[in-house]
Length: 124
Image (cartoon, rainbow, N blue to C red; front, side, top):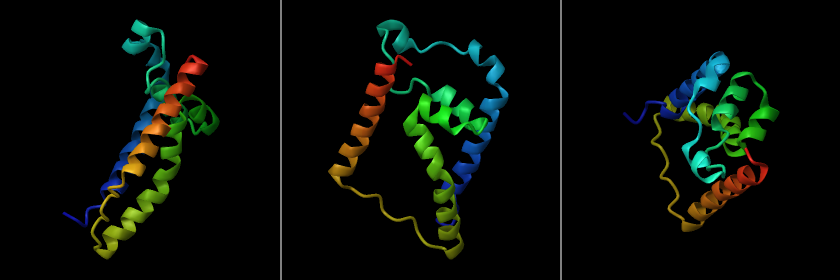
């Protein structure tokens, strides 16, 4: 179980999802609108993710960063993470323990809050 390259498999799935989003872009207008934005008039923290995935499927990185900077930044890190995971699985190493630092959690929440404020300010 520990030798399965889960991150690399997830990267493959993410690439397929972005490709599929680009293929299905003509029918994206049929998707339901964001309920949070419809009720409050403000963007939700995930507003722009669908359009970000569509842009990633077209390899349009500037548009992807415009629609959702956090998702585009994570997508940019996926190849390095997949290579690290394949190397780890090849060597038979275990996954390292996740950091249990409260500061890391605070930084992550601040990044997500910052993206939400940016999305709301731009009216996405």
